[in-house]
Image (spheres, rainbow, N blue to C red):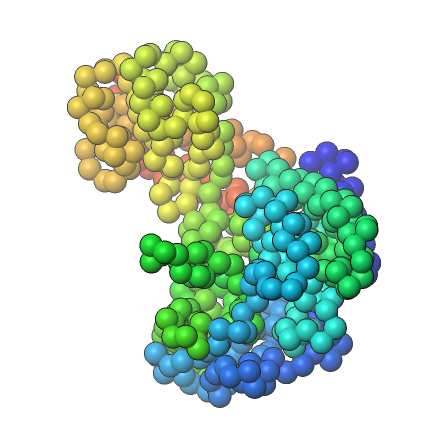
Length: 480
């Protein structure tokens, strides 16, 4: 990240009117209200249901003297599987929706927000309610944290120390958007009358916008909204009070169920027996650590869905094949029939998607696997004997183009991993030594993130090395 962009990111930590405190304060962060309303009582008063054996509590990490996990939901007694835990009627979730008589300025602002930053659209609605005196949602909003431990609020040096270009690009992109959107908001609101001001005349800057976007990205759920004429539903982001205090687990004990009942929008049920003092946990999705850190502000150790992102580039592939001891001209000048397959894989031609992944549940992205198999083979007939799905599959069984081709593919992937690992300026042992010292919370999170990235690369290299050894027992390695 450039010095300019690090300054942009750091500028978002300055506390102003409707703003977010610095991320370094995220250990058990204060809530917006100094004495926040009782959220459970509010949900019940509004017609919702909360199981009598659920309470809000500060959660501690397993390690001693850890920073803690913030507020969450905990069982005060055993809860049987299948029990209703929380039920929210339709009027409690916070959505972005226009109502008759409301200022249209908010809708105009939302039109400038790209779809990929959907959290900002709901975020401006959240800011509107935060600024509104006597907001129906204040009992919920008052319980939200003052700060979020997401990279846009990290000090510049911590952002730089992420050491992973794809994530740095995303941080850069969000910071740039927030600063540009701040200017747009100020211009749009400059001549607005107070009665029509969507934020009650309060100053809205990049810090406030970043807080709102982070609040939504870390807490909102995408659920079925209004019904379309064809019977399908609009995918609608919603903030679900109390439900959004459930933490994440890939082995959750609770699950969300959306009701078709006119009065009940959504509820949470016990997907497994919940013991006393257990946290209530939902599965946020099969996400990699880039998403978890950017949107939620944490990293999942040994995340089975974590991966590294590479650009499909002939120069990179040539460097990897040379490092693997494999010589082929096909990366820079693929044959016409190979180009046709690359087109079908969307790795060649206009509007192609050149982002490919290594790691995760599939070990290597199927498009990259198929491309390497094809480019490391000169046998057009052998390739055309297989459909694209077969060429994209790494499932156990006979290699589609033979063990020699397969071993060359795997050795090239190992070399790609080595190149990716070399882009990190520190080694895992150096990172672990940093964690033994007293460092800031954001610095610790950054180090843990990059340890996980390096670990998954090393694990992938080990896996492919094992596969090469198995193949070497069948046939000598060489490009066909």
